[in-house]
Length: 416
Image (cartoon, rainbow, N blue to C red; front, top):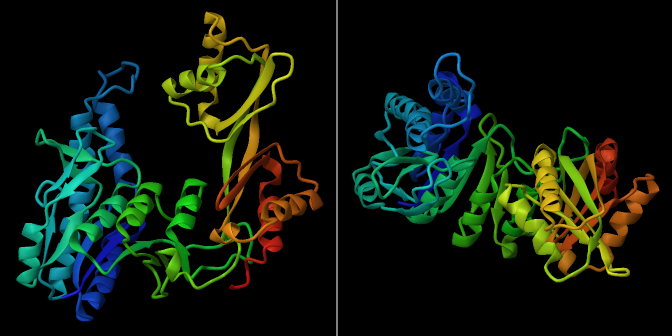
């Protein structure tokens, strides 16, 4: 029997009615002849509720919350959300006459690292699942969790259920991994910004990885990375319609020929510039080493040409990490490790990116992007490029205008 992995996110299993709706989609695939492994998230909002309880239980009554807790017990608590959903889904499928049972991460087992809260999947042993498939039993598996070498429950961090689904699809040799969510596929840009946004039938792993890393919320970066590494075909589908969705696959399977596949954006960006740094060997390491130690996720970087022994360095980071970045730089200056003259921060910028594998074979794409922004009098503050991506920082007030202008410039409403 061919195998299929179906993953349902929190909004898709938010209550019993939605679980029944999801189970109907599972039954349809079983009736079509598939052995199905269903991966479920916790019901919408439940993980946040569980995290809140952990926070509350980790401090004495009346004490200030320090944010400290035993990460092993944190995982034990927050993993319970998926356990509830898995049991309810299995029960619902049984009511429909389907032979189904639930599995927790430790029962499979899903072996992970011991980094509680952000564990990585190391191995999935499928022998027990294979035996139950052979008996005609379908699997409902709790996403987001596994077990460490020490025998403790672990959780996989943000996007963990997507990652679980892709890992099971690879381990089980599934024909496809269907990710069911509250959107019906991957669009050329955010439909809330432009009504011209078009749903893509197919998109390459590389393009999806870039879009996910640049702010598109449809799939988490880790799951796309895993799918690309193991050649798992992903289908992004809506839990609330029967539309086919978007297939994420190898570049060779993508039939559309648009130079650009999508426009992505990140609203909450900040830009920091260090002026008149002493331009000596190791100056960049002196800047970005302390930033890494402070947990600042640096994105775009520009270093100006040295003039008379001094240079400027500009970088971007999430706006909620500016305080950490500023402190790291100020501490470096106070200790004498960094000799910059002044630091300028701008917390009112946004990142706009165009992505497309067609850039590899078409010249002038960046020029068209810059000209389109220029026509709208949008000033570009920082530019970075890769083989299939061009990103710019602009004033945040121009975000929607920039997205619309670029979508129009590359005629993304039209299929290739």
